[in-house]
Image (tube, rainbow, N blue to C red; front, top):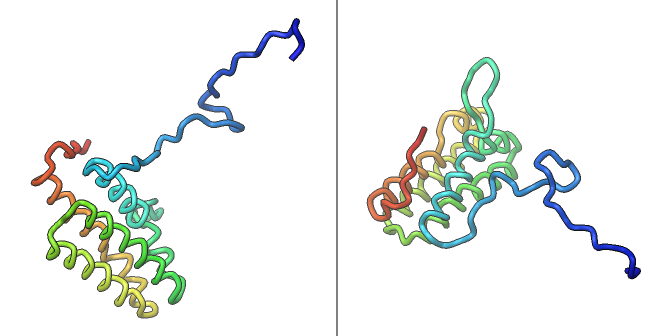
Length: 152
């Protein structure tokens, strides 16, 4: 840098700058504390079960039902994403019987979802990930009440 040039101060990017966006709104915590795990499970459940609403029906649908339309591979991917929620629940040190119940929900959803046509309709109706989220929330509300979130 030449002697007569002044350094240019670096400003944070404005919110609407397409080149360098600011921090993402949906950043998820990386910790192993119950609050972080709860937020990650809730985010995964939303992606899998309630990503968007079908026009006309007003029913929310997510990736679980959509990728389930792809034969075999889609069902395997959906099962893996559902298993992630069970794995996160294991990180909470939940009782084995609750983990087995959650795993049973995922396996049942995947087994029936693998049946052509009938399985696709079933994926649309049976929400194993929402059921598993309910199990986790119940556990956290009882054993870690400080993680409770008031729904609006």
